[in-house]
Picture 1 (cartoon, rainbow, N blue to C red):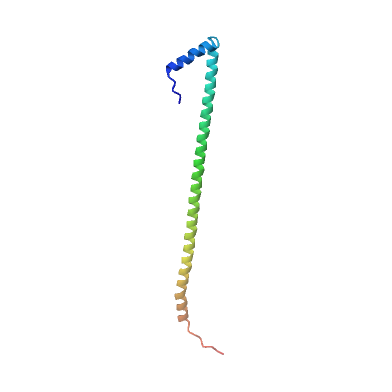
Picture 2 (spheres, rainbow, N blue to C red):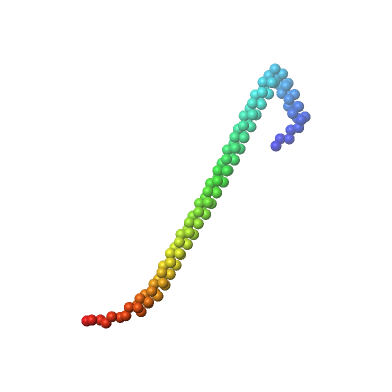
Length: 114
Protein backbone atom coordinates (compact mmCIF):
# COMPACT_ATOMS: atom_id res chain seq x y z
CA UNK A 1 0.00 0.00 0.00
CA UNK A 2 2.59 2.55 1.11
CA UNK A 3 6.03 2.26 -0.33
CA UNK A 4 8.08 3.56 2.58
CA UNK A 5 11.59 2.26 2.98
CA UNK A 6 13.94 2.32 5.94
CA UNK A 7 15.56 5.60 4.89
CA UNK A 8 12.18 7.37 4.77
CA UNK A 9 11.31 6.09 8.23
CA UNK A 10 14.64 7.41 9.57
CA UNK A 11 13.94 10.85 8.07
CA UNK A 12 10.45 10.89 9.64
CA UNK A 13 11.91 9.90 13.04
CA UNK A 14 14.55 12.67 12.85
CA UNK A 15 11.93 15.28 11.93
CA UNK A 16 9.70 14.05 14.78
CA UNK A 17 12.63 14.25 17.21
CA UNK A 18 13.39 17.83 16.18
CA UNK A 19 9.74 18.98 16.06
CA UNK A 20 8.39 17.20 19.16
CA UNK A 21 11.55 17.17 21.21
CA UNK A 22 13.34 14.41 23.05
CA UNK A 23 11.28 14.85 26.25
CA UNK A 24 7.83 14.34 24.67
CA UNK A 25 8.83 11.89 21.91
CA UNK A 26 8.46 8.70 24.03
CA UNK A 27 4.98 9.76 25.19
CA UNK A 28 3.91 10.62 21.63
CA UNK A 29 5.31 7.32 20.34
CA UNK A 30 3.44 5.40 23.08
CA UNK A 31 0.21 7.26 22.26
CA UNK A 32 0.65 6.57 18.53
CA UNK A 33 1.28 2.90 19.31
CA UNK A 34 -1.91 2.70 21.39
CA UNK A 35 -3.91 4.40 18.65
CA UNK A 36 -2.43 2.06 16.04
CA UNK A 37 -3.42 -0.93 18.22
CA UNK A 38 -6.99 0.37 18.53
CA UNK A 39 -7.19 0.83 14.75
CA UNK A 40 -5.93 -2.71 14.19
CA UNK A 41 -8.45 -4.14 16.69
CA UNK A 42 -11.26 -2.19 15.03
CA UNK A 43 -10.25 -3.38 11.55
CA UNK A 44 -10.02 -6.99 12.80
CA UNK A 45 -13.44 -6.65 14.43
CA UNK A 46 -14.95 -5.34 11.19
CA UNK A 47 -13.32 -8.17 9.22
CA UNK A 48 -14.69 -10.72 11.69
CA UNK A 49 -18.19 -9.21 11.47
CA UNK A 50 -18.10 -9.21 7.69
CA UNK A 51 -16.87 -12.80 7.66
CA UNK A 52 -19.63 -13.94 10.00
CA UNK A 53 -22.22 -12.06 7.92
CA UNK A 54 -21.00 -13.78 4.77
CA UNK A 55 -21.09 -17.17 6.50
CA UNK A 56 -24.60 -16.46 7.79
CA UNK A 57 -25.80 -15.51 4.31
CA UNK A 58 -24.24 -18.68 2.89
CA UNK A 59 -26.03 -20.75 5.55
CA UNK A 60 -29.31 -19.05 4.69
CA UNK A 61 -28.78 -19.86 1.01
CA UNK A 62 -28.07 -23.50 1.87
CA UNK A 63 -31.22 -23.53 4.03
CA UNK A 64 -33.30 -22.20 1.12
CA UNK A 65 -31.85 -24.83 -1.21
CA UNK A 66 -32.53 -27.63 1.28
CA UNK A 67 -36.11 -26.44 1.79
CA UNK A 68 -36.67 -26.29 -1.97
CA UNK A 69 -35.28 -29.80 -2.41
CA UNK A 70 -37.42 -31.08 0.48
CA UNK A 71 -40.56 -29.54 -1.04
CA UNK A 72 -39.74 -31.05 -4.43
CA UNK A 73 -39.20 -34.45 -2.81
CA UNK A 74 -42.49 -34.13 -0.90
CA UNK A 75 -44.36 -33.29 -4.11
CA UNK A 76 -42.73 -36.24 -5.83
CA UNK A 77 -43.72 -38.60 -3.02
CA UNK A 78 -47.29 -37.27 -3.01
CA UNK A 79 -47.51 -37.71 -6.79
CA UNK A 80 -46.19 -41.26 -6.49
CA UNK A 81 -48.79 -41.96 -3.76
CA UNK A 82 -51.59 -40.65 -5.98
CA UNK A 83 -50.33 -42.76 -8.90
CA UNK A 84 -50.24 -45.87 -6.70
CA UNK A 85 -53.77 -45.21 -5.41
CA UNK A 86 -55.03 -44.75 -8.97
CA UNK A 87 -53.33 -47.95 -10.15
CA UNK A 88 -54.71 -49.87 -7.15
CA UNK A 89 -58.22 -48.63 -7.90
CA UNK A 90 -57.87 -49.68 -11.51
CA UNK A 91 -56.52 -53.09 -10.46
CA UNK A 92 -59.42 -53.57 -8.04
CA UNK A 93 -61.90 -52.78 -10.80
CA UNK A 94 -60.17 -55.20 -13.16
CA UNK A 95 -60.25 -57.94 -10.52
CA UNK A 96 -63.93 -57.31 -9.75
CA UNK A 97 -65.01 -57.98 -13.34
CA UNK A 98 -64.02 -61.69 -13.39
CA UNK A 99 -65.50 -62.19 -9.92
CA UNK A 100 -68.82 -60.72 -11.07
CA UNK A 101 -68.74 -62.88 -14.19
CA UNK A 102 -68.13 -66.02 -12.08
CA UNK A 103 -70.93 -65.10 -9.67
CA UNK A 104 -73.37 -64.55 -12.51
CA UNK A 105 -72.43 -67.86 -14.13
CA UNK A 106 -72.70 -69.80 -10.84
CA UNK A 107 -76.13 -68.53 -9.86
CA UNK A 108 -78.78 -69.76 -12.29
CA UNK A 109 -81.47 -67.38 -13.33
CA UNK A 110 -84.55 -67.98 -11.25
CA UNK A 111 -87.83 -67.88 -13.08
CA UNK A 112 -89.84 -64.79 -12.47
CA UNK A 113 -93.09 -65.43 -10.68
CA UNK A 114 -95.44 -62.79 -11.61
